[in-house]
Image 1: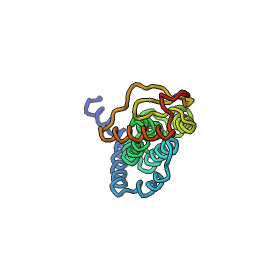
Image 2 (image 1 turned 90 degrees about the vertical axis):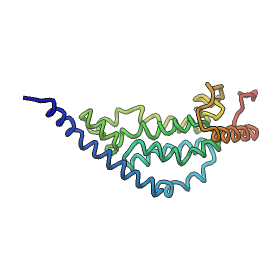
Image 3 (image 1 turned 90 degrees about the horizontal axis):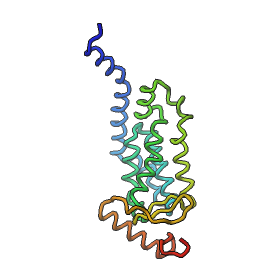
Image 4 (image 1 turned 60 degrees about the vertical axis):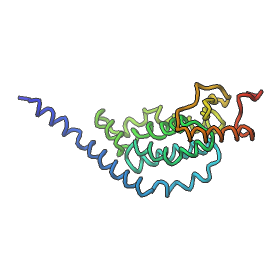
Length: 209
């Protein structure tokens, strides 16, 4: 006869493989983060980044790289954000654009990696191998591509003052600036003003806008 204690044990035992993978992945990823392996491998790229397009591409690819090598979604979000947040500020971009780029390359990419904690969990819960459901994850595959393609012509860019461009690159008023530390927001606003004065970014006051 089935007892509650027995059912609980069976339920816990069925998830042990996934739980162990998460523990090992976080431990391994924590070591790689502590020794600065990602910064050593990819840190040189950021010195060559000069445009929002290049910054978004590097952020998305770094997030994907972290998830694929460190096997954990959270490390794929934390490490790139700590690496590139100052670069978003120095380009006059909003922190919400950093967040969106991490979602495109991190959150959506994680379920597609069989050995990541997220992919292993989904596979265990659904009872379907990760590579079997991967072709049907249209949003996960298309979103990073869409983000990179649109920003290449100046579309879907979120600025520090809350303004934004639509998918076709037309500048519009937003809903206010994204939350950010005061010092970071001041840096971003100053950089944005300088780039608009230099004509690098469009201004809401331009007739062409």
